[in-house]
Image (cartoon, rainbow over all chains, first blue to last red; front, side):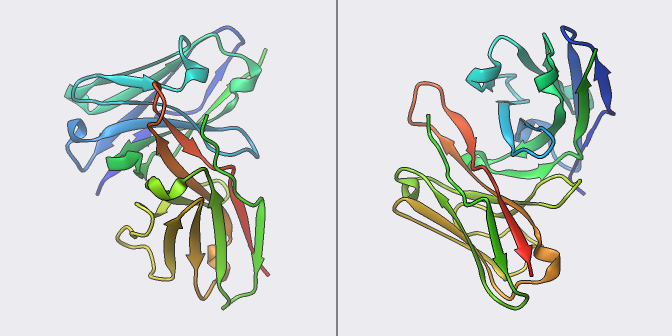
Length: 118
Length: 110
């Protein structure tokens, strides 16, 4: 079955970077975009950006420009999201989601909790 | 920037119909997607492209979109439908296209 499996929880200090992975299975990895969405506790969904695994092209939300990098390794069907210069406000659950036409996100990873604390 | 407005909460009795709105400027010209999220779980797509349902989603879930309002309708509401619901569009009107989510609506089944 189609699924996205993310890496485990992370605890980071302010100013550090975090890299979250998202491994795809059950479909052709390069045929669909990967989006990254985060959600702080008790808050709504916040889109961070997308990546085309085939070309490597990316598009980032303006809020995260300069701090986020989305990459992939097609040989292992895995996408990555790296967020740098972490601050406490970045504490959230980070999701990857498969993207289709009109930016629909039809398959989601289980989420990765990132905690930023000194 | 494009804004999607949802009511914070909607309450409905079991067996009744719940309607969750999503307001946006000329949203009828965009494709709207809806997600259901239960506590501690990842979101699940329940309606896409205004009114289509992914496989496995009950027919009780339907959607419409016209003018400045999109609506998710849940018929014959069940206790298991209690969740947060989010609408989402792709805004390509600016030089920097991006995904927009509504603020979310908590559906309470009385």
